[in-house]
Image 1 (cartoon, rainbow over the protein chains, first blue to last red):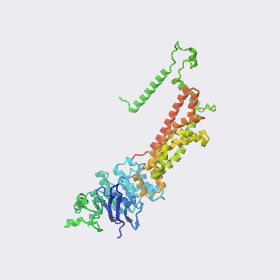
Image 2: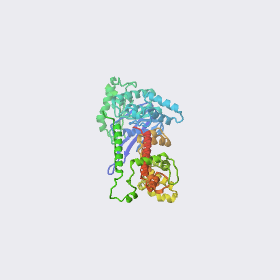
Image 3: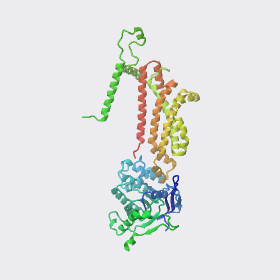
Image 4: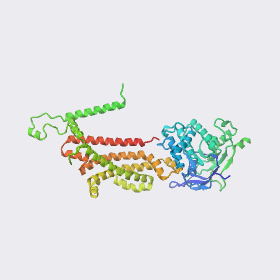
Amino acid sequence: MKPFVSVEHLAKIYPGARGEGPNCVFDSVSFTVDQGEFVCLIGHSGCGKSTILNIVAGLDTATSGRVLVGDTEVNGPSLDRGVVFQSHALLPWLSARKNVAFAVRSRWPAWTDDQVARHAQKYLDMVHLTGSERKKPAELSGGMKQRVGIARAFSIQPKMLLLDEPFGALDALTRGLIQDELLQICAATRQTVLMITHDVDEAILLADRILLMSNGPRAGIAETVKNLMARDRTRQTIHRDPHYYPLRNHLLDFLVTRSKRYRNGAGSGAPHTTTREPAQEVAQ
Amino acid sequence: MRLPLRARAALGSLLLLALFLAAWQLATLPAPASGGTDPEYAAMLGGHKSGLPAPAQIAEAAWAQLKDPLHDGGMNDKGIAIQLAWSLGRVLLGFALAALVAVPLGFFVGMSPLVQRALNPYVQLLKPISPLAWMPLALYTIKDSSVSSVFVISICSLWPMLLNTAHGVASVKREWLDVARTLEVSTVRKALLVVLPAAAPTILTGMRISMGIAWLVIVAAEMLVGGTGIGYFVWNEWNNLSLANVIFALLIIGLMGMLLDFGFATLGKLVAYRE
């Protein structure tokens, strides 16, 4: 099957300060996301993972390489790719419902006010914000704000969802709750998702496939790890799955040691990506 | 028991007023007749009266003015409400004309760093010019003193509104614009529904500053061109040597300025948002 999104040889290079060479953040980043697949991109801060997401969203441009969605090349933002921003990015002068309605109205300009309001309410109900829809973002807790952001992104029914460390600023308890909600919604809608995170447990819980990025400069995707656990996994039972600890150890080992050792572009034009399936390690 | 801060502050204000009025009354008490002064010379100076009117005299003058505010006895004899209305009308007209130019232009300047840099030297050069210095040029080209003072008000209201609008528009959070971009919002819709509400508090602050300056300038402009208005009233009463009326007019000017400022502060609260 043809991948839904294919990212091909992306590189981002900033011109260096005077007397210094150009600063290459990442280079030769290639990966694909299939229809209905949940992919997590994980790496240390500064490796350019947010920039990659912004390039896929069309908000930023790559120095070289391209992103294909279906058969068309991305050359700007689109309603087909919904974005959940790290800082929730709600418009502070609008209530929760009006923030979602703003997106709904952008998607379906011909709808009546009533249709827009009902559609927005449906998505606010989905993220369990019933009763708080009239509140302004400043009156909502961090978790609730991010839920509005998620409702806004889902409400336009995008073909693909892009999440940029959406739970980074939340406390562990709230994060867990929203992760569960997101897992349910994605399972129900078969939404295609690309998510940035630096949280190993979040990636294990949510992702079908995890892309590991090496440290910058000249960061790249060092490994691709398949999550072999059943898709109906939950936060409560996941740690009893035999695949859980090998996968978690594998990811942690990468972040602690291997992410530093990996050298992007070392050798000739050979593919830099290695695919590991941790389950096989258990079998050995 | 302690009163809340607001009540104590109000008490303090009243106390200050009482002290001030008492001191004023004492200072303007008729001087005791001393044998050294020639009675005729004293009579020429206005008898036993001191030069400055006492608070009671000002209250008297105020009452006389407020009793018949719409009185119109010709050129130099108009009621205070008529004069105030002339000044207010000029200020509001000049301010509105300035807003019509400054807000759209400020939007444009704020959106484009190129335009901002290109216009900046001229704005910096024109901004420090006293608005009254434009008066000769205005009188020469417009040939109408009343319209000229409206023009002067426009010029002085222009800069704070222009600079604040440009600043407000230029500092709209990038993430809000990114949201609009990912939703494929049209330029007009983005300007009206994202940039304008985001910049509105800063724009309103600019308007409040402009209005403050305009109200300062109108008094001086009307003193200069004469005819009508609260500024002309002050100058006319000075020529009549009626200091009681001058002081009364000063209070009215202060009060009106306070009301205008309060109005814009209220508008500012309406468009304010908490992040």
